[in-house]
Image 1 (tube, rainbow, N blue to C red):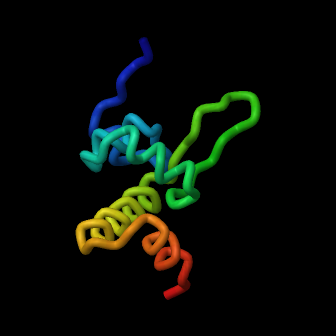
Image 2 (cartoon, rainbow, N blue to C red):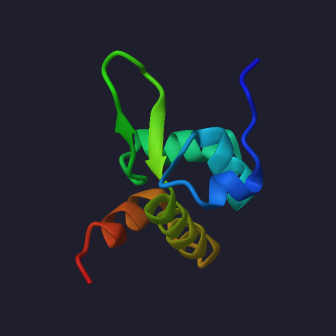
Length: 87
């Protein structure tokens, strides 16, 4: 079992794990994983260590955008389309 970082450490980190994103956003693990696999949430992955690292600020902002659009009734394909538009 891995060591669990404190909320203070997480909120001051540049990068977080998927489980830490779950803790700070309240979005389910499977949902974040799905959005990641669909290319909707930015992450980095080192070759020797397959752990995905999410840029905390960008990932939280993107997850909030996705959640807002989904609550407005947009489908996943439409959300992906809207997120690909440069504002």
